Image (cartoon, rainbow, N blue to C red; front, top):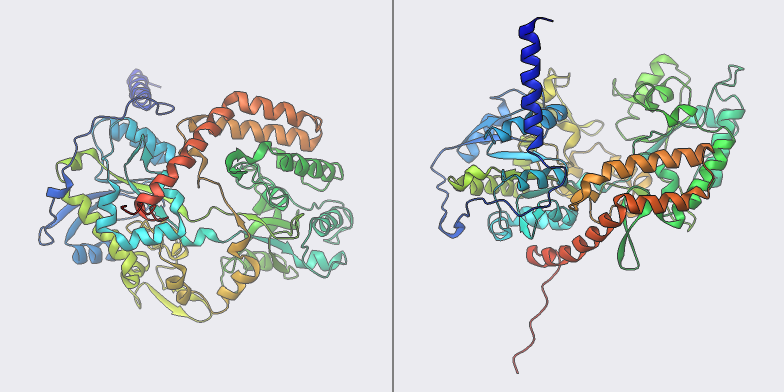
Amino acid sequence: MTSREILFLIVTVLLISAAVALIPTAPRNAAPAVTAVKWDAVRDDPNERLKISWASCALFPSGKSDTWIQRHLEQVFNVEFDPIFMDVPTLHNRQPLMFSGGDIPDLCWHGEPLAVQRCIHQGFVLELPYELILKHAPTYVKNLNRYGPQAWLYSRYKGRNYGIPTWASGDVFPLVDLWRKDWLAKVGITKVPDTLDEFHTALWKFRHEDPDGNGVKDTYGTCPEPWWGMFFQNIFSAFSVLPQDLMMRDGRIVWGGIQPEAREALALLRQWYAEDLFDPDFAAASASSPTLRKFSSGRIGYYYGSASWHSLDLNNPGSIYTTMKQVDPRVELVPGPALIGLDGKRHARVWGGPGHVVWFSRDLAKQPEKVIRVLKIIEAFAANPDLFIASRLGKRGEHWEWSAQRGVHLLPPYDQPPNDKRNLLSIKDLENCWGFFSFCSVPLSETEPLLPKGMPAWRKTYSDPAWGMMNALGKSDVVPSAATLEDLRAFQIKVYTQIIRGDKPLAYFEEFAKVWRERGGDALLAEANQKLAEREAIYRTVGVIAAPTPPATP
């Protein structure tokens, strides 16, 4: 390496370090001073063409400017977009440098409340009164209140609102499990397991009765992923507990992972591990041996949360089913709903309707009409399903079409990656908050006609929203001390794995719970309960619940 290259490297590291230092690990101090806007005096002239820099969700890193969707929306709303495309790593690494240098796009997106709080703390974000959103986007607010009201907390900071929460109607559906039907038949099981006992029997037979028929004991029941959102969630849900989420108990918020039900689930998993039912790789990082690869290669016969209408579509050349059939024509797959829990009911963790946050640059205090124009845009998406569909799929007959068998689908050449994302087409995300321009969703009643015939009934059978359990606040990192959450979750996964494998006794659970509280859990729970009380006031303001009727005048 030359001296010039070394010098360049040192300068780059110093710049990045300085930028990162500007963002605190957790926002705790006074709210930033941002110029207040007299919104009553702001007027948005629809005849004035506004230029808006737009850094929306990080799902389109290969996106290009001047797509059909962009031109269409620019014409409808009399705007000129300056789209900024990033992937998630770029979002995390580039944005701090941009913002600290004063380069803040007019509109920005963040997936996690803590990231939003940090930007607010640094004074990057313009305050956005609830009244303004209610005035210019009433239909949007109505949908948000129905599908994801908890998201109102995501843009809240020190008693004020700083953004537009998003919502996703599709996130109310529980994940569906995927089973090797041919393996079930081979070991004498004639129905998809429904209960914990049936589930245990299937895993035991998959390990000990040679379901692939090769005469070698080389198969396992499953290989759970160590990521907190997937780690044995099906088993914990059967015990009616969410181990890595905030839950309501007796009117207060608690942490699911330290509840007695979590201990009971660990006792069962510990027993099953001793019976050699889990691929031992589950305790390691899944990046080197992902569960999908193990399922596709025939090492495991059950894959949690991986089945969907599309993954089982043999007419889809990219589906899991088609791919596995091409390797081994004998493969038969079948979906499985959430397990029936100890109370005789199905339970499954769901993300729920709350989504993310879109916020505005502090610099728009000088051009507040842009804020109103954006609010009008999201209101139009909520009130006009055809416009929403165009913002996600482009032009019918050119970019997409519909059939009873396939539902809505992209046409060539847009059906081939990366042509879809390059043109901002997000066909799999109609019911989610991942559109580049339409970062909201629409009601299920408006997306259902676009689905393949039979898919709504399939969902009712295998993915009933009534089974869903979600985080009590939508996301745990809405609290100020959420910077400790990553450490707490990693600590919990480590201890859970040690207990399941037998490295620690089951009795260690009590010590774990004690350390979890001392390590920041108690502070997190105290703040979560404060947020719970704060949420009720927000709900009254935005119309989620009716405001109390004032007493009659004597």
